[in-house]
Image (cartoon, rainbow, N blue to C red; front, side, top):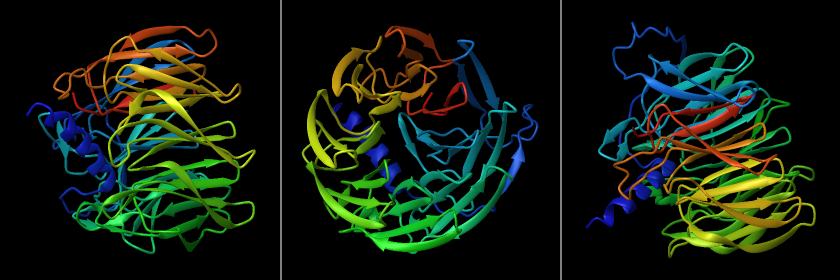
Length: 415
């Protein structure tokens, strides 16, 4: 039965994205300065953060005494602040469960941390940044919620809005002055898919609605040029191949089709290209769907390995990086070519981010059941094409990575 453990780990990742975990509680929004001495920390273990400075090529750590240990956080950069939002806060062996209302906020200019809380505990909210604000929308924990928590990075204040329909597993991205929250699902294990699209316009502060071509949740959302793409996902008990495309320049919608129906795909954009990878109904896939916004055309390429859930994806310059199981597929949009690399240690579910000319892959599961976590950081220099390694302060998996200014930040996860 050892084969069940990797399957269960993947299932936890999907359930966190879907918001199908069981806990229900409400907390008033708040924003409190971290004391740094732990005197007020009576409920939570301290959170250790590893920080890499690309200018000085040095590492440091921060300890957030008033935060909450959790994994698989959502992250968004707004202005010169990074928010690390929610995430499952219960642990049993190598599995996460539950949900958190915690939001850790890093301010790059002052090099300080603050902790806040969203208005409603929920798993799997959609998180985007637009017009100096971070929007944290929807999510489920037992029930699903309409709630949109809005953080204004300039004033450091919170407000609340509402989606037109309570749901989790929402696809979200921004294009122009608009943030779009598309589809999603509700009910036990995402049984009820939704087609609603809630659209926030930062220039007016107003909300509007639209609809996807068919209901689904847990798809991938990405923006390239003036277009926002919502691809794949779960519709009832099967995967979808549909791509709904919103063109902000014309205000019109169109559709396209992926080469494969994909359940919980992952997407990124680089140059004029949007790329989609991820599992199908039948398992992992080595195919990547590529949309070129400049020519309005689609193509398909073959990756060096098959990808399912939990691949580490980041971009730097003209290159997109896809990593899992110790292998890295690298796409150069400038030359439309692919290459491969190998991490110094084979591991699953690493975290990836880029800062300056450096691309970093940190932590991950060393063994199949994630009972051993890696402290290795593989660093690729896009200028020299060389790889080096570093160490996190402790081994961890399901950690979250983000970058702001000259710093790459690694936080949370299973230790």
